[in-house]
Length: 172
Image (cartoon, rainbow, N blue to C red; front, side, top):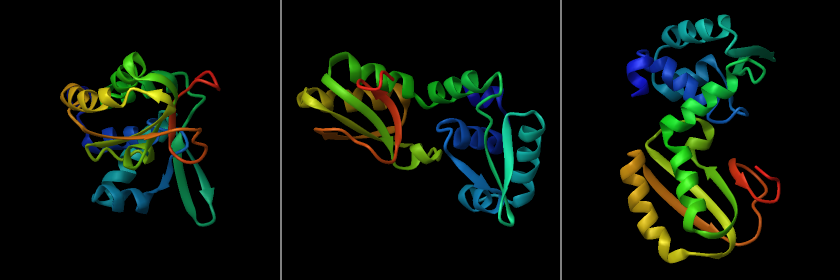
């Protein structure tokens, strides 16, 4: 559905890259390589998004790096739309609904780096998790969000990498 509003595939991919996780940043050649597109197409969209204030750029040695402008008035709205487009809101809701005592829900893999490959890797931590529900949940989520979902269950706390969607202790 978002493809009908944002008709440029390159622009949509850039928005996913930078707004699924505000820590994501990249430079022109890296994006062209990652997306398999020409630097001219990427440059055009980067310039449009930077001119609109949605992205910011800064120099890192001899490269210009881009990332989401977290102080832009529409940052939260764009982030929420991108996460809803990827199905992350439904994913989190379904996990918290019947999984038991969930401590954390963390996105790992490509999606945490802003690359929509069609697979979402999710780490769920907590004690007394309802493991029987995961198989049913996986099938249901894959139908709802039209992406492959891979769950990893763990006890204890996860502290490095990934994109934190839920953390009971931090109140997120």
